[in-house]
Image (cartoon, rainbow, N blue to C red):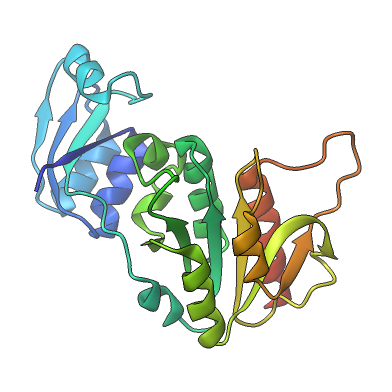
Length: 234
């Protein structure tokens, strides 16, 4: 098992706090106090290094002077996500930008989503860049990687979830009942939700756009829909 690198103060601190994956070593060029305290609580060694060493390991990432060697990301199973009470699930169909994925994970964590489902192919996973963009939320959100999203949607429907694809012309998000077990599907900004995936859904949902641009960034759309679902749940 080859260790991975994560960088940035928040991703490193949250990796330590969550305890979901082993942190082998922290390399710190700035002697950050929060990192040191979190590392002590987990009995993880912090090594003082030069900023150039951190630069080399981060490979151009915005590292804030801190990197950590960690276990590979611990993806969850879909069944684990569906086992949560009143599941609120986000499905990403073809999101390939790690910064977009990270921002989506930050929104999912903030809204208390049960988990996020992404395809194994033609989609970005939880990279160091995604972890940084998530401000460490990636260390707390359950993420499942599925070979076939259509089959995953069928499993969710069998488990009692209503599944809606975000699409122009769908029912307004404030008028759709999102108060029960539900999954929301968002596509890539280039092509949206694929036809076969959309056809497996129970319906479509839309966010009103009052300006010249037809759609929101996927992370913004995710936040709007997830927080509407959370509002409806009280």
